[in-house]
Length: 178
Length: 300
Image (cartoon, rainbow over all chains, first blue to last red; front, side, top):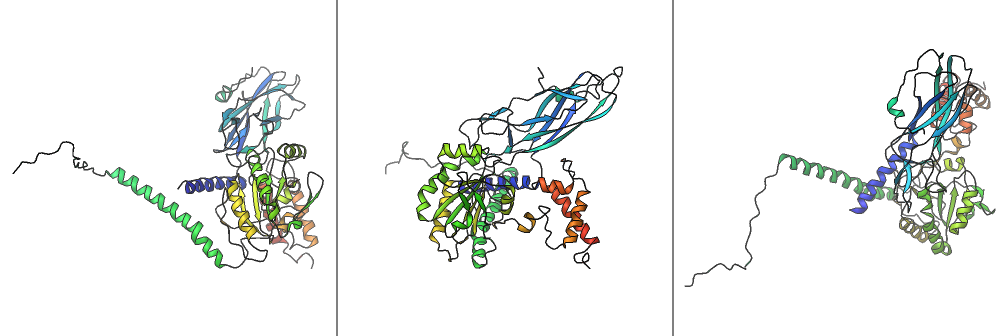
């Protein structure tokens, strides 16, 4: 009976991997700003919101073991915007059958913060910042190859006399920028 | 006549209180029975009926020939699968960044120790991007079997690597008898090795049911070399004329891939063979292209 149950669980997990194989992403990610627009010569708060598929985990930005591939967000600096820093959440320690020690991982929903600096003389207009959310996912029995989700952030720069409205406040509450 | 007094110490018959099954408990019992029946039927089919049917089919459709390859192992020696013909081989696709892969390695080292003298060998194909971590791990664990760095093409020839570890069990006849995806109990491999070692190269080997973390269908499917070795990876161009191939490739150069890579469809196929979206789009473009320029028409 135990073997049958084990077989059933493994078959279901295999079907799960098949799901990943068919190109359905294990991680979905997108970037959002803390305000509806930005001013030149100011700091912008950006969040990368990622959702890890149920049953999978991705490694902490600072993985527990040397051999694990860290999760990383890379935003490409441009003539208009530079990247000041990227802030990662703390992973959750979890025990897996393949490791003697609990591993710090991200599961479910996670948010990575980034601070961008707008150039002093960026004219009003809409700009694109590109980047990627790089990860390597596993479940308890198998791992998928390292990959990344492309990120595109549209930033609208407005004159300084135009007030900025906060947006996505629930997302930004989850980030500790300090 | 003496009146019999009941013995207080004698066991007394107790009557269980009559319980009335509620509609809820009946429903639960019915649901459990139905689940048990479905699971039971699945396993009866999988391990009894399906193998029996397969045994009647003399063909080797379920056991394709293992694609051969020539690599150089991490110690600098040539590693050709064809050199192992007549031996039982476990071909392990793994990576050092993969925890479930690493945990299998001590078991493989043990199997190599135990069965190498009987005509068995382990072969490791690492899908790490660089050899350095592989060499370090190889030395740390004192791996006793050949390990080489693989590539996407080899992975595709073996049907793609949806997850690691993916392990193939190859018989003396060079056919693939089992494929395991995910960390698998070493005893499963040992059982399969023993059975294949017992078979002569010509003998029909008993069909394995797949064990461990595997897909539901038992057939071991490998990749199609016509697609894998194509000028547009993943797309079979063998039925196209040279002129059509050029026309199709030019067409793909004018189409932007929407997977987020910012490349043309042709470049995305060439640099990212794993991209399922560009493969689907390129196939759709080919189908549309052949409708306007059917095979043979271009050369007329």
